[in-house]
Image (cartoon, rainbow, N blue to C red; front, side):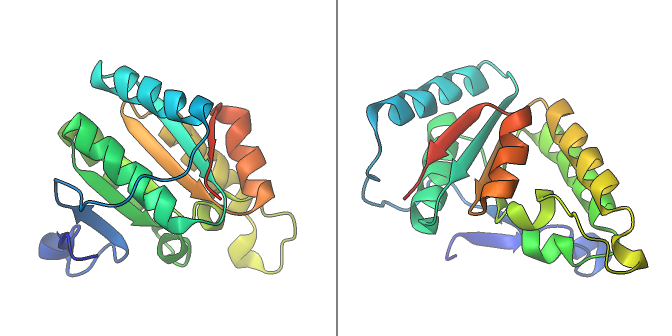
Length: 180
């Protein structure tokens, strides 16, 4: 990521939130992704709603990570807003990940950032088997995080590869774009 400005929160709390990056505008020029017309229209409608300061949630499903990042950067460029790239695998490994995410959502709301949750299946996927006490409240944390994102008044984008996480997110948020 050549457009990396800095790691978010690093000045105040000495690396409090590794894996959260604030990206520059404008986005680097990339070739247009191969998408169906309905998906192009969904992206255009989402940009229109977000420009009116309405809450919008998009789910990018599939295995093509370059297309997902391109679409997120394209949307941020169209809206002239910063893109906050959140690595969910890094946040999922933190004990205080829910606090970091709560603070991030609050700042993103105030500064009108676009939140891009990369590999959202790591953070928002359903945990069915409890292996030890660390995972005891994992499903409650997922519900809390989904509620937090639902209350977020800006644009949130989720990048998923697993079907379980996609289904969970689709129950809350209806805007699904396939990136294969």
